[in-house]
Length: 449
Image (tube, rainbow, N blue to C red):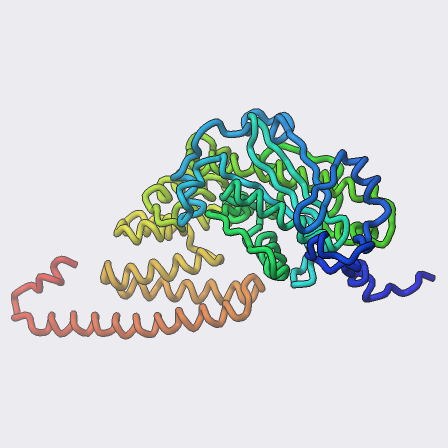
């Protein structure tokens, strides 16, 4: 029978060494050294890493240069000149102009003692990378035990001072807030302030989530970049492997974590170049309708309606799945309405009518058009009735959520009641006009009808 796990085991594994964390070595009590795990020296030998020292102590450091950003992808080589600032502004509209200088980019990825966040979580391995000599230089900073955190954070701050554009994948939500918290908790190391932060998770979602479902970096590498990592450690196992090492387990399981971190950094660099080439020139680099649709959404979000409309039209020309096609048509119809092109908007709405979210929006928008612009309340009322019938059908089939059914039906019934009153008044006004026409004279309105 497996003995019950100690719920405080992880906390105990991170217990600081006898010397208080962050206390400079020359102020530490004599004879007191950090409790470095026994396997740390063997880990350094396996990795080819060295001990790095600064005012706050020591940590393990490893540097490696890769001639290719990712293996076998010459098209995603390190940039040779200035980057497309217009494309970068679509991704980060408020970014400083220095983002166009690739020499200022610093890629960052962390491996931590947990995935849920909180002040008790530590980034025990921090990977950074930058373009260098036509390839990519990767540096990894590792806490052999808890008291080395200050030394690691100091080294990272020095790198961030050299390159002021931080580049991450989900770093705005996870990696960077965690590091800022750790800097503040030292009470002695000022948090670095990047001049710009480019997070490529968000454009990746816009570009590929509909096609792939998952936008995990490894999935994007495989299906977008054509790079298969091969065997890789599972992210959810990483914290436990580190805790086991702190408690004296062999260091060999840590080696795949270093490789995992290196691949994350290289994959991020390659993905960044792919995103920039696609956003900057989608007509040339877009490989399918999904990518064109994704760039359209990014352009629309940044207020570039003209470019968004052209790309939506191009994406619709591809054979997109029905749901994505409806979404593209809905977005294009909204832009057409905003521009006053009611003919195009109505044409798109007519093709979307049906039992779907976009279909019900099309019913509503067409009803609005015929009521307010075409002045045909009878036709608008007919569309409202059809929408109510479609909602009832969807409710019977269970293809619509109950709250969506109730709110949608209430909205269309309210519109229908108003339209019927308006249609009734229109008919009454017409009859009164005819009754006021002298005998033998034709009513101009009746004649036109």
